[in-house]
Image 1 (cartoon, rainbow, N blue to C red):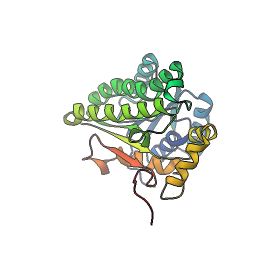
Image 2 (image 1 turned 30 degrees about the horizontal axis):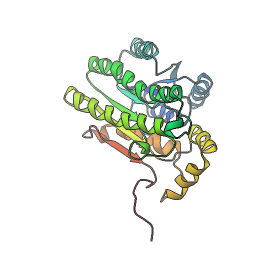
Image 3 (image 1 turned 45 degrees about the horizontal axis):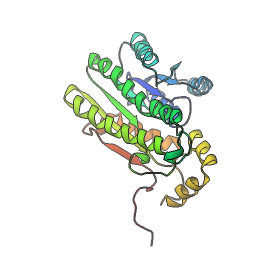
Image 4 (image 1 turned 90 degrees about the vertical axis):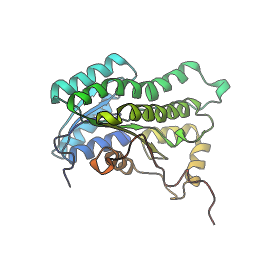
Length: 257
């Protein structure tokens, strides 16, 4: 396996499972010094064990990415430990419950916005100064196909992911000339623990998602993680403010013959 991220310092949030875990593993395998954060401490322990058993290293830290104090402590820890920050994959997120807008609990709506959107704002707020001190860097934010569509019952999730898309574009515009690239990854139906749990509470959406995917299958976390790594690599050096949709063709539209 190539070491195209050798000597790079990488932060992955949501590293306790799914796409974040796979991204942390791949960054470590390709030579990066990886820091992983998640609110799920048990998941972080599993991620760390997986990576260390392969002979690579990772530094994990329990973090509530919706709280600025936690995010600041996390970024300070990365800088104190590694001296710099080169790449940030702001990936932590939740789906929230499934409710019509008029029935959506306000507290739950606020929580989804905080974890999915406020966290990306807070992450970039503290990551960008760290990257500027290091001479530049790359940020990848996890959006979703829900940043392009309007899945019924998921108003908080869709609103948060539309917001991530907007934040990404603003951050890219503000930092393109300062040596920092910012882009977003928009996963489609991906077989992660979060999606599996959401499928159980919203079987109609799950069935529609599966039948609507031209590839006739969900994505695997590693497939999405590979896309995140590409977005943060030199191979995408002229990509700024874009949202890469990786969804098995789910949002193509049209119809099959």
